[in-house]
Amino acid sequence: MLLCGIDVGTSSIKLSVVDASTKKVIHTCSFPETENEIISVSPGFAEQNPEHWWYCVMQVIKMANATKKYNPLDISAIGISYQMHGLVILDKDKQVLRPSIIWCDSRAASIGDLAFEALGKEKLLKDLLNSPGNFTASKLAWVKNNEPQIYEQIKHVLLPGDFISYKFTDELTTTISALSEGIFWDFNKNEISKDLLDYYGFDVSFFPEIKQVFENHGQISNTMASELGLSTNLKITYKAGDQPNNALSLGVVEPGEIATTAGTSGVIYGVSSELKYDPNCRVNSFAHVNYTKDLRRIGVLMCINGTGILNRWLKENFFPTNSYTDLNSYANQSEIGSKDLMCFPYGNGAERIFNNKIIGGSFRNLDFNRHQKNEISRSVQEGIAFSMVYGLELLNSSGIVPQKIKAGYANMYLSSIFSSTIVNASNVSIQLLESDGAYGAALGAGIGSHYYKSVHEGINSIKLLSEILPDQNKNKTSDFYEKWKSELLKML
Image (cartoon, rainbow, N blue to C red; front, side, top):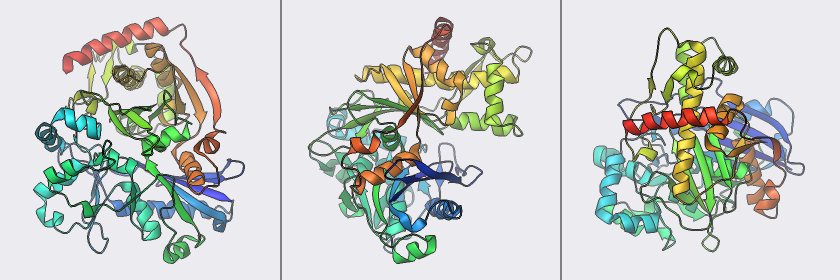
């Protein structure tokens, strides 16, 4: 039996085909080779076309099947991981009405702030665990307020993973986890929030059937099975937002466990058994993949919008002929502190950790005589790492106190400078594991199809590659971090 995991990221679509019995990856690939564009027609806007996501999904499946490394008809279940918080709206014919307003779009922040005040901060935090902020519910309200001719045609409201699942199966479903990340879910009443729907004037019929994350979300349609060369018996048995899924892929499912990732955005994600929330809404709480009404598992998430996207910006605009490996090499040739050059990676929209303020990305102390490509490269990595450490401190204030954190050996964590900077500045070790989002989604498919008898059976073979501990550079790194943080606080 084979399992397939599909990770619908902002930059690309990644796929892994996994042997269910051995949990070994047979093949992994991504599409397209160049990173997908984020459309930004106005400051703070960020959109992508859901139909383009689906085109990329089809292409990556066909590309993987063409390798002949496995029989596509042996794939029994697909798991889907997807970029969180995006808004996908369909009409009565299930056609996409407009581009998706994606996770890093900040146009609806003021709408969410008004709802937070009007409905009562204390009540919303207790019920929804978050302010509506610039999450999916507020994005839908923006469409209602600014594009009434489109809003009037809405029949279905989906998260990105719900849309991809629908394209496979022609069936519409969602999950409590998805609704919670959109800030639609009332945790105390265990239902879609009537208070929020009434305030915004949304119809509850917009939302599809609610299922568990690990459950059958539909069987592939005959048309898609034929188009993609897959079995007509194949089912979608798992779908989760990319950060809960990343945590699953690292074996983080129980209270006290911590995961981190640094792709386009940077995230630290801890699991709690309590309905935890940050009174200042700098970190956010959602239903984790194994959340049920009877067994509460809450993912407490700290997100920074501009991590890998900053590194990509640096490479594409200043080192277009170089690889990310080259940038890591340049960074290694500079000293800790980058000769006092400081980078602040906040150029990708409103940041939740700053109460949805847009402070912009910047460099401080830039000296044209002292700072060259080595210092610029290291400063970018140190700035991103320090932003993660600052986020760790915010998690501490919400009762999530890590002793160690787990990361997949991918993206920014491929850089030893990046990883060691986090460890030395925070005094928290990092375990690097052989895993990624597509692999985690494949394991999720195995859990959802009941091939694995439990969540723990599904994740018990994730391989530890190495553990990074504080080293002799700890004091120098932590001292520079304190200087960096002092400059950051002046900006807020």
